Image 1: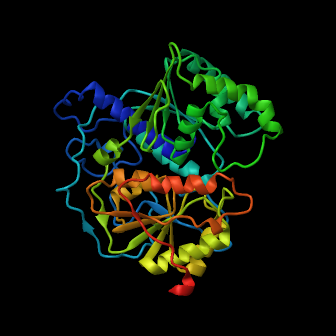
Image 2: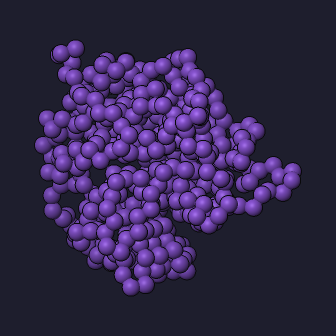
Image 3: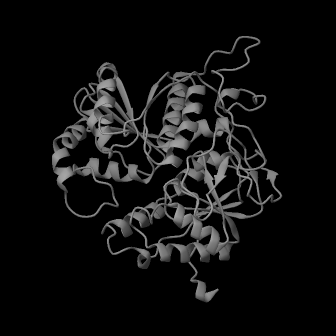
Length: 427
């Protein structure tokens, strides 16, 4: 796993796998917890939910304020970290009359989760929080500084090779990752599971069905020198991700995908998230969710800032939940120039929103959350809305596929409200 969302979806997959195997036996009388002690433990557990996987429930989200202008980019503070700049808006607890009840807690399949740690401090912080939750669910987490220096990749691969060769089933989070593709060439498992990695999963399934090489949707142009050198490993990994005789491939996703021949698609409905967190408390406002479309070179920065300002003004948004990959300079501008409170969550947004406090409307540009939040927040009465990306916002270097791909992300989302972009000049 290389991102917090991937690790969250490993927990979702394992939980669903345990549900299919049947409910766990009742705990012994007097048992206090279902997992090891954790730095994230809260108060007394709710019925059937081990406190080893619950976070404290303060009146503000578990998040940190983006550093002020000129401040260095720093790693997230120690757990727990509270964002104390959120306006103390009145909130209420959502009634659960219409909410799907939590699924029964089940004994999870004990996994060894390997985290290939990235450099980005916000991603690392979220991964560490998710690792604590995974340990609380009974999994072993192996943290690998896979990008820690010139010798780190070879050391990581050598250390993982025996484990990979013995494993009968491999669960991966990012089939586009060169690191993951290289490790797949070592594995001998006949059972491969690809857990959701957001909108990238849609592109992966499409390319798998077409038999084309695996390329991220926002990449433009032909192969570079590194691509050519890595091509044999990528081809080998792709074969291992293609079902065949004695080789099973499963895709676990909340995205609307059509299974290629021989591939099993299992729906991710966020049952673990709903069983462990919430229902959320609601503020009376609107929250705006950021994206990394600028950082990936798809959308022009000035157009993005103009769109954020317009949406905030039109819908009364006061808080901006930053994507973990958004740059500090960009967030400074959103805070200073647009007057929005910047919240940098230290957990995936699905968990932050599920716990609350969260706005009655969550507004986003086309991204993974327009598919995942309606599932995680089912029955809460929260509206998830999306504003399409205007083609005029795209950069000159954006992939030719970007417009169609982003339109498809919105068009295939279920349970959302589509809102128009209103230029500031008309407000």
